[in-house]
Length: 134
Image (tube, rainbow, N blue to C red; front, side, top):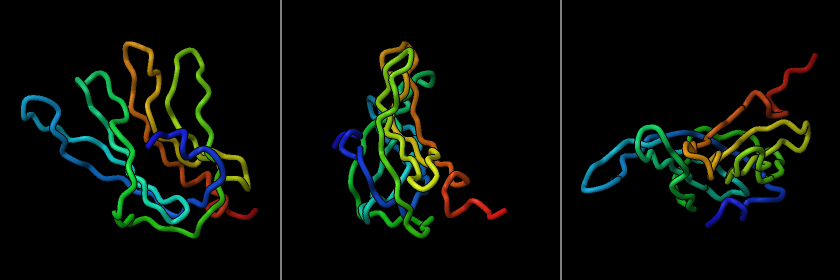
């Protein structure tokens, strides 16, 4: 699947992180970060490709039956692809529809640069359900 498939309105109800050992080359294994998130009741797993220690990127995103441990009441989010800026990006950003704040970003930043980088950001303080009343 592609990140662009997640553009549009969804219900976000869980996010957590884990570490996975992946085979990179010639039977060499390396730990990588994984972000797991639940949209519309479906669990998606995006994993990092650590590449060479200086560069990194999103390895893949897949649907899974993994049970996300950090669950919360579903919030309505809008998925948009990150603006390209100076370098191209392959990053989906999920914004809380109620307050317009960025809650989750996943993908690869600066895809056409010499140093692309893995993006896996969860900002729970931006969720409308976490903003305290004044």
